[in-house]
Image (tube, rainbow, N blue to C red; front, side, top):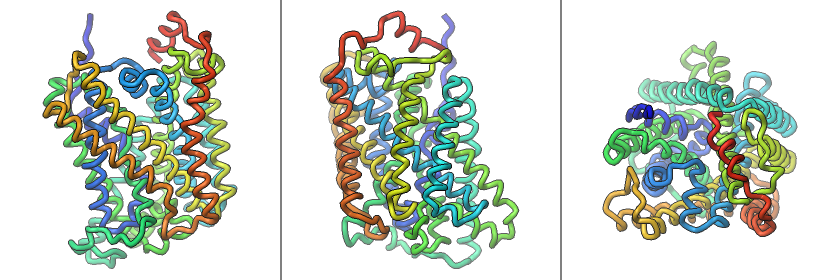
Length: 479
C-alpha cells in the first residue's frame, strides 16, 4: 500500500497561519492601543497554545473523520458530543454575518463610504454573498477547497504583511501616531469590566488550531516536529496580528474606532491614510480587492467543515433523516441550505441595532461566547481521555505526563470561562442601544444554542441512524 508523503514542518506552519490569521479582528484589537501586545500574549499563553497542544494529542489519538465530535464522544458519550459539534456549527453561522459585513464595509469604502453605515446595504451584501458561496460549496470540495486556499493566501496574508510594513515605515519615518507606545503603556488600564469586552473577539481571533491538528500524525517525528511547527506558527501569527493591529491603532483615532462603523471600516481607513501619505493611493483598489477575496476565501474555508461535523453525528442517529441528505457531489445539501436560512435570519440584527458597529459587536460577541464555551468540553475531554483511554497510542502527547495535561487544560478552561462571562457585559465605549435587547439577545442565543441540540437528541428515533453502506458513501468519498 502506498503511504502518503510526510508533511514538512513548513507546510504545517503554513496551514496553521492560514487557518488562524484574519483581518476581521484587527480593528477590535486596535481599540486597546499598545496594550494589545499584552492581551495577545496572555491569550496565546492561556488559550492559543493550550488549544493547539490538546488538539494535537487528540487528533493523533483519534484521527478518524469527525474531529471534535469523536474526541468528546470518546470522553463523555454521544449526547455531549452532539451538543458540542452543534455549538461549533452554530457559532460559525453567527460568525458569517460578521466577517461578511466587514467585507461589505471594505467594499463600501470605494463605492460610497456612506453605505458602510447603511443597514440595508450591509444586509443585502451579506445575504447575497453568503447564498452565492453556499451554491459554490454545493459543487463539491474540489471546487470550494481550491478557491478558498488560494483566496486565503492572497487575500489575508498579503494585506496583513503589507499593512504591517506600512505601519513600520510610518513609525520610523517620524510621522505622528495616535497611541502611546511607551513601555508602561503595554500594561492595560482597566477601570471597569466593560473595558474588557472586546477581548472576547481578540481571543476568538485565535480559535481554529484544531483544524490543523488533524495533520499532526502526518508530520515526521511528530513528538519533536509538531511542537516546532507550533512554536514557529505561534510566533508568526502573534507577530503578524500584533504588528497589523498596531499599524491600525497608530493612524486611526480612538474616537473613530468607537464610532458607528469604526469596527468595520478601521482597517480600510488605515490603508487609505497610509497609501495617501506615501503617494500610493493608486494601490487602494487592489488592496480592497485582495481583502474582499480573502474574506470570501475565509468563509468558504470554514463553510463545509462544521457541517461535515454535524453530518458525522448523523451516524449515531443525532439528526433527522431530512438533514442527512447529500447531493451528487457528496455535499450535505440539507444542512448547508438550513445553515444559509439561519444565517439570513440572524443577519436581520443589522436592521434592529442602532448602528452597524453595534450589530457587528453583538454578533461577534455571541460567536466568541459559543466558540469558547465549546472549548471547555474539548479541554475536559483531553483530561478525561488521559485516564479513561491511556492505552490509545498518540503520535503526539503533551509533555510532563498527566500533570502537564492538567496545567495546559486548566489554563484553557479558565480562559474560556472568563471570555464567556465577560461577553455578557456591555462595552464601555460603544453605543449598543437597548441594554435589555443586547443582553437578552446574548442570553437567548447562548442558552438556545445549547437547548436546541438537547431537544433534538431527546426526540431522536432509532430510524435516524445512518446505515453502514450509506456511512461509507458519506465518509469515504474523495469529495
